[in-house]
Amino acid sequence: MAAANVNGQTKEGKRNCGIDGPTNPMVTPLLTDLYQFTMAYAYWKAGKHDERAVFDLYFRKNPFGGEYTVFAGLEECIKLIANFRIAEDEIAFIRASLPPSCEDGFYDYLREVDCSNVEIHSISEGHVVFPKVPLMRVEGPIAVVQLLETPLLNLINYASLVATNAARHRFVAGKSKLLLEFGLRRAQGPDGGIGASKYSYMGGFDATSNVAAGKLFGIPLRGTHSHAFVSSFMSPDEITDKLLQSFDGSNSCEDFVSLVQTWLRKLKRSHVLGGIFGETNQSELAAFTSYALAFPSNFLALVDTYDVMRSGIPNFCAVALALKDLGYKAVGIRLDSGDLAYLSCEARKFFQAIEKEFGVPDFGKTSITASNDLNEETLDALNKQGHEVDGFGIGTHLVTCYAQPALGVVFKLVEINNQPRIKLSEDVSKVSIPCKKRCYRLYGKEGYPLVDIMVGENEPPPKVGERILCRHPFNESKRAFVVPQHVEELLKCFWPGRSGKAREELPPIKLIRERCIKQLDQMRTDHMRRLNPTPYKVSVSAKLYDFIHFLWLNEAPVGELQ
Image 1 (cartoon, helix red, strand yellow):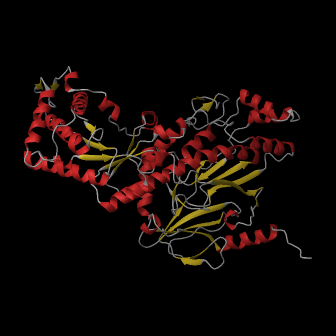
Image 2: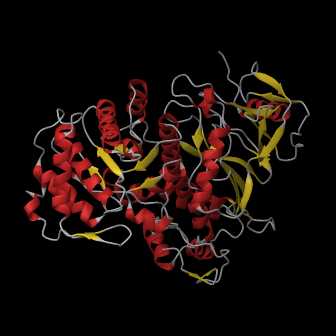
Image 3: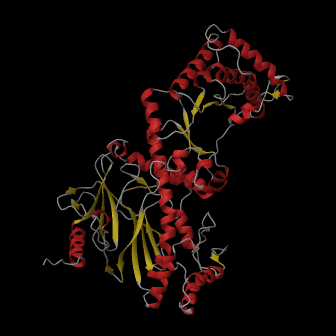
């Protein structure tokens, strides 16, 4: 396990800047692929282990058929790096896993490995990002940096995928709707559940049902009751403690059950509502009444256990009106099955009729929440049909990323000992962009981002008001001049190593969420739409373009025809 922190230091005395270890205790130096350790030994054996290497971490294609991605997982990466030390029991396991021919000196080397000589430059967490642009640049001794590859990819791939999925659901639902993450029971294990809650919130969801995530990250919690709670009751006679004090404490109702039944009779006699329902399910009424007695200020009822319009809605309204008599305001209802568009509209009419007939202010605005295996497509369909849902509880399709299970982030060597390196492929999309780079986002007159551009580290940065040629990395004919009105440098130093650079602070999740929402608001809507979104432009400078193709020709073997 990673060494515990004591006054900002690991037990071995190495500085970690007071950064806590990873949230998941399984994230240790052993959370990596075996070949990282075999390569580390081969580097050490060849005397190359301390050679200075630069790797880019990036992805090649946006997920879910879209044209944007939300970057997430950076904080957990920095927590790993800050506390990266290989413990003695871990070294013993590595020794047992490698061939016996490996020399003892290698294990002595592993005992001294940390990230004090590693530099991390990264895009800020919560930013909208695009293919080919480095999300993170990792620089340091090649053996150490290779040991970081797998855990960094693991921590960023799923986090960014879920945050993007959440942002896409938010875009379809609209800003005004409450979005609740309900996916813990369907997530891929405990870590998938915790990560999904964290990164869904970061991507724009409002709350989670996951209590552990609420404790760990301060995410707002939401939840009421299940169908089991409703069906566990048989009749109102089961309720023995019927006393409910008024909201202001000035009086109390000795028999809240009778007050609820009085309101139900009033609703039945209503000339507007009486024809909608007859006898409601009394076990459901008992469950709602009991729940209201337990949570009079937070009463939200699941109304589809038996029949939504003939039982669930009238029973809810009877309880809500009884609560109103005592100064409480019911929260609303949840629909978990059936035609959500139709039922939400009918429920809204029912609430509005009560407000009008009984003079209950704002009862017509009672909140309606919907769940039931929702995803982007069903949200879009509900919008087209017309609905009255105020909030959505989304689980399986959100947390499992059902539409696309992986993002495909990669980690490629771009420079070693100040010598640029390139990875070639017959598939042009897999050709890496060599050398240590700086990355900028160029904004136009209307405040929208126009293009991301990569330049060599020693090239002058783009300047506001100065025309710059932006070239597609591999397509010669795709190029454009841009005169930026604002220039944003994307890569910032989050772990300076021994460079002496200032370190960017890791903001709390609430600020990352706000940044994400602001970033998404800045994007042109044609980049964001579900169907046929416009690709966002990613480019290189003219000088970097020329260098890429020079190196490509230099490294590619020349064929011979006979």
